[in-house]
Amino acid sequence: MADLRHLALTAAHPRSRERFLALHEIAQGSCATVVAERTGRRAQTVMGWLHAYNEHGPGALTYQRTGGRPPFVPTSLPRLVIRSATRNTKRPVRRSPEPR
Image (cartoon, rainbow, N blue to C red; front, side, top):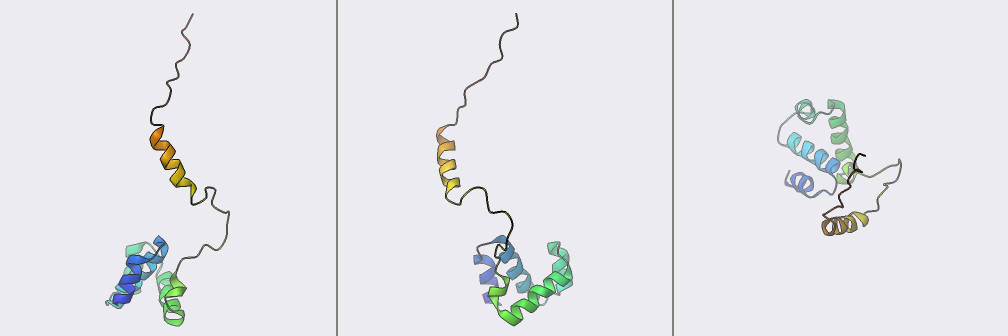
């Protein structure tokens, strides 16, 4: 049980944390239906996580991006954007032309 709690607290992705925390609750005596209602998931989904964990271990619940459009912004760019955004806090004021 402590392993599931540790995995839930240290997982890199929120989806993985959700899955490990759900299994931690089940290991403490809760049922999959109650956990599913609390998390907004279907009971079959939570049971699927439980079966995957039992058959393949923690690696089966770790979130992995499986496809779709790649992210638009590279992972290193947000740091640069944050740095430049803090320097340029004042924007020039645009004034409309005076009416004639």
